[in-house]
Amino acid sequence: MIKKKTIIWFFALKFAKNIKVMKSKFIFFLFFSIVLKSLDAQFSRDNSILPSPGNTFEFVNNVNDVEYKVAPKGNNQKFDYTSLTDGMSSTVNYRSYSGTKFPKANMRISVGEDAPIELYLEKTQNDVIIRGLDLGDAIPLPLDLDFRFNGNLKFLTSPISYNMGPVNSQDKASITLPKDVIESLVGNLDSLIANASIPGLPPGVTPKVDSISVEVSLSSKISCDAFGKITTPTIADKDVLRLERALDFSFIPYIHIKIGPLPLKLNLNDLGLFPLPSEDLLPSVKTHSFYGSSGNQEVVLATLDSLGTNYTTIQYDKKAVMNIESISKLKDFNAFYNGRYLVLNFPDNHSYRIIDILGKEMNNRNSIEKQIDSELWSKGLYLTHFYDQNGILVKTIKTVKQ
Image (cartoon, rainbow, N blue to C red; front, side, top):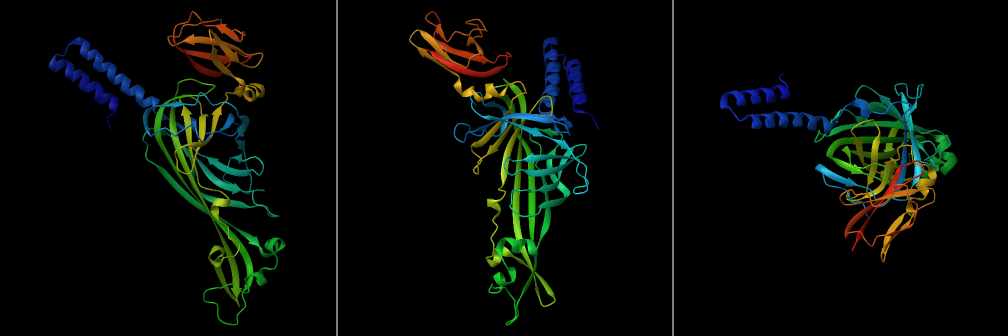
């Protein structure tokens, strides 16, 4: 197969020889071909995006469902999350795993804080596949709820590129809950179903409960729907691809009974017994992951609301350089004009740098004075960059001098 680059150069040379195009135009055409090649590289990512056991990602978690609208699909977007302020630090650890519970899994992560869910994953050459789900204490039962999947569900795939076709996958798993375990929580099951309306049950026949099972179905849709530049309190104008992941969960509880020697499996929700709506356990989740041009780390992970129009939570990479003190005090930064003075509020042991719209520095970068005489400044936009004690940029505030 002839490569796109070969075709471009072939036509460029043919055009130059046969049409005798001016040298400057020919050079421009060659330059354009090189730009095309660089654009292709910018808007695709290889399997370096896949996490590996031992990777530790540090994030700042923010909750804001009003200010941050979801940017539309398309190219050359501007994802600006500069004004993200307060939040708490959290760490995502991809730990290695080898065990008989999920034999094909080679790493796992914990999802959630108070009652974490363990997700068991298998990393292959170009995919990360969900192999198991351990609900742990998320559902209060005196046994572990472990779901084993067949390996059809993709948690992350590679390579990715802008406008890639959706990668759809789905899988199912189930777990059987012994009768005695359920009865320790809800009482005698036989008596609870004695008066239940069971389709096809002959008159005078009493059903006996054998066990209860729960089936979980998960479907995943991964697509890359936008690219552009992203800005957060820790980075500026970083090239990113936006990957959209939609995970849909459904739980269906079944009761296994016997009518004489005949086994029967019935949906508990259909019988009106112990309804287990999926939205109360694990709702459908849609996220946007922004992957930078280098490294396998997500620069930003944002969770969409049910309408897909706002972000309900945003996690941004803190680059392991911001300490907890800096994070907790981000909300303490402020800048405003009071007459001829620009008044700054910022924590002690921090510094700042003020520049105008053309990049001219208005003060010394290591300044710590909190009131600056701006009488001689021209009208217009000014940026105040705040730095922590390690010289790391932690916040930028825009002010307009009237």
